[in-house]
Image (cartoon, rainbow, N blue to C red; front, side):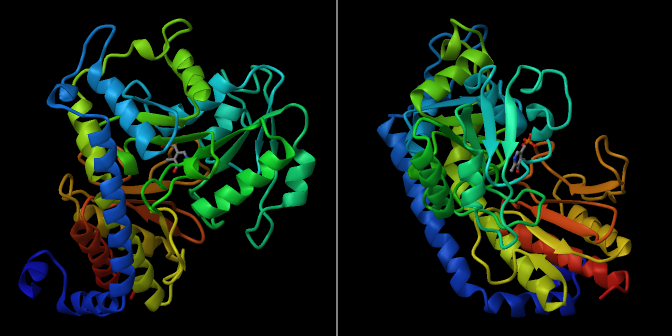
Length: 422
Ligand SMILES: *Cc1c(COP(=O)(O)O)cnc(C)c1O
């Protein structure tokens, strides 16, 4: 083992450091494996109950009428998420699109959208109209209200109660912290929040942005009262195999509204050819529980390794996990560059490249990104990014296999060592 790691550029010292950290993580890894085991059976059960057959793996072209594989997959998703219906389509281009679709199809002019958990994910700012954009909800006369979390991360129940009014139609709850420092919400906490909201206004639609959260726990937010859960197939539920796509699972009426908006009034779910992607959609969902477990192990390994070296990590080494994102404060530009270089050099694709900062549209500083992915931009694959500014946080996630995640993290550490930073 030492030799192959040595051949891959990992010194004995770094390798041993990793092994030491790992011996203390046995129990946590066992717990993650148990969750994966449960979720694996949950997915197989859903596929069997829906009688997934070889014929389901064939796609359609053109209008896509009577697409058995597409319709059955949507049934499988609704069983996995325990909802009445689901929309799972390659025509949903990404997570932002899925969220925009869920919002725009269920809100009407004069309605108000409320986020009771603070500012939503960056890309939603333009969807909502927090930052002006063509076609935003604001442009269509949908207003927006926001209640921030309290400083200790708890819900501001009083503020939420005051914010709910007769216009409030939909409440959006982001499960993952995304690229913020607030804690990620557990499914149990989301359930508490939804119960509270519904106790004030029973008919309000509660939507959960489920990105990065799928299969991290044995339950999904749709099991604790969410009317819609929404996410991207190039994150957890695509298992790294889905080449595109998004999903909305939830109440029949909510999903139907989304289908009519995605295609056209009158057409809804009946059209939308699946082309050739169904095998990857099915197989990706099938392996998603173990892929998510690999990514989680990588995140916990990194938190423990870097915390031991004195870095501030969020979540910390012992906290419970509700999504797959790990943040590390690297404190210098050199450290951030070295970290990302290491992640890149561990990649099976484009591993010979060195990432550099670039002026990404919409950001006020340069951003560096490390990714050597089979699916472009897929963040269930091992990837890291961060803005090149104080305090030089890196956010990293993914790893289709635990061993790749481990190698990537060791490689990042090796690069910090080679640069004389640790
Ligand atoms: C990734 C993500 C999104 C947006 O998904 P894209 O596929 O990048 O458009 C939205 N919300 C959260 C919490 C995310 O992590």
